[in-house]
Image (cartoon, rainbow, N blue to C red):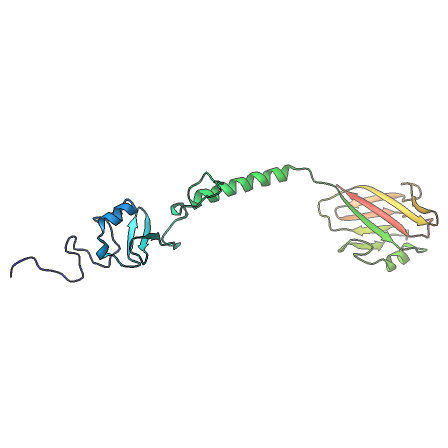
Length: 225
């Protein structure tokens, strides 16, 4: 028999299987141009795979267009190029772009963390009553005092108001007490007619001797720092 034997299913030039993802003599192709020049168009078919650099590509239906196979198990983030039409990134691939975004986020978080904490004002409104217990019985959560707060009368003096608030880590910096009587809102004086003292322990605050001489609606403004 004259001539070389032909193994069906193998390339006669390399001896490799025809269905094997195409390489350039057992190594990855350098570029798409090299692939198109090195593989005859008649040997191509849609979704035929080739390796260019470290990325697996396949031919589209026109057999002249190569597209990356974007499977996470095939491509690493650093191998995926980005289209930066707005010229936002210095990066040219997904991994470096994510590193840029994270860098900006961390820098912004540090700036926010360094900002001073603004004070918070909270208001308690207690209806008129001849005792603190009566006032508290008529007060409505969310409407007259913040949601989640617990107000109770404590101690031997029934005018001692205990407030358990929800502002963890905050301390009270000032307390203003007003009485709404027939003349308007009267500002009461601390340590005299507003209250006799204040005790604070974490989220628990006790206002001692709260406006004992007034049977009018009370407004208590708490400023937290």
